[in-house]
Image 1: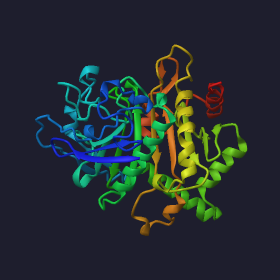
Image 2 (image 1 turned 45 degrees about the vertical axis):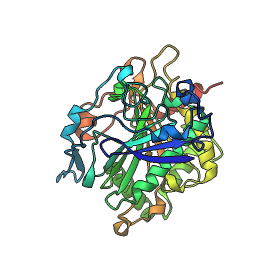
Image 3 (image 1 turned 60 degrees about the vertical axis):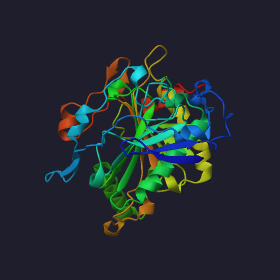
Length: 376
């Protein structure tokens, strides 16, 4: 992997990730318009990485604030400046496409493979954390499921590199790499991309998992994550697919109509701790899952909206916890809010008001459907 760091006109950091060093993938005089960035054959002329951001941007002005709820004990980010963020622009005005001709975007280069930059409209900024955008491909009409295994591996490497870098910031406590896909989820930019949030606190979901982990250790002396994965593999009714180094299953108490948890078989706390064998197998497993999600509701259906995110151990604060960082298990959660063709799962009174989920699809039925739509 080749990493190139530069700056945008307003001082925000921009990082290009290439599968090979610039200059090795195509002749220096090749036309970037001839590139096929969605399939890993983009132009890697070193000069394009030096393309300056020519936009007349002023400094980024954010109003991010973290407020703590005294009743629930959780944190809420107040980010009123996000009301002005870009909202469903036409394809020819997409800020995540490469800059070409007079069309200047967030990415000054005329082509790229994977690019990561600081969000201009962050939910978290400064002392309240950091938000980054991860562009998987220069192809506006692509999707993660349509990437090659080589490109998916490059995205994994970018997630890993950013997780390690952000963990070195003493103000950061937890890192979440995730993708929202589909207008139904609330996505405002159609270009295939994800985000990375670096929180200055441990998120409520993780705090709940850590408490369950500690109770299970106290009660049984064993690791809860290990026992859960072993139980799902033994039962088998909710297992979707298995590799040599990964297992994907629908949780016994899935909250969402179609929800899959993907675990490496060797427990590690975060992405930087993943071994090479698991890294090498991940693209095939993950792309298979995403493609199955797009086939859940049958041919002719629009692309399945989903949320996919990596749950990683907090990077600090372990001195006060009853478990160790290595007890936490890195895993990916993938789910859709679509419960059947043309119908969404809305979070209404019980879910939104009391946090009690009601799932319309039995987890065993969801797993069976995901096995059924495997690519023959």
